[in-house]
Image (cartoon, rainbow, N blue to C red):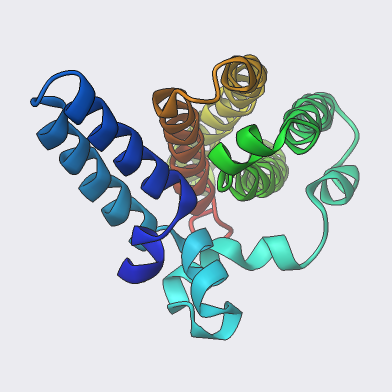
Length: 231
């Protein structure tokens, strides 16, 4: 994994550009470049998507296989169409429409931009899948909340109300995250355009991938807390 991460095109590009800049401009860029390169190696070696790409599906550690499972089944757009009709489904479908436009913007760009964004598309696919995971969990939680909200005898009062409030809080958090992810995807589309214009600036690509990693981490954590077992 470390060897593959060391030879990754975007990582090598950062190292080469940094060394050249240190030689031609100022010496202090060299330690900054080496520190950045080491950070990129560390992040790449721990990236489940990159692990799958390097090791093959069956060799990826179990935790990583769980993270990429949904990518092998059905497209996020199709899964979104299985959601109950309503506001949640509309928001998810709108977010996925933006996601497809971001992917298309990367795939239709020039060779240099595609090389810089080599690992961005898999991250986008992961975010789309996890967004649908959250929406599915949200709808299941809403169904349980409706059942808990039905009239019941007095003996079921306190505990039932506490469970209902907990579910409603999770539903509210999921709604906010779905809306927020849609807005962030719009921002990512603008970042792709800026990278296309300034493809020689590796900082922009790192910023884009860092944003996607943040989206994926939040969606995955939220999906786990709203799992059927937790409900």
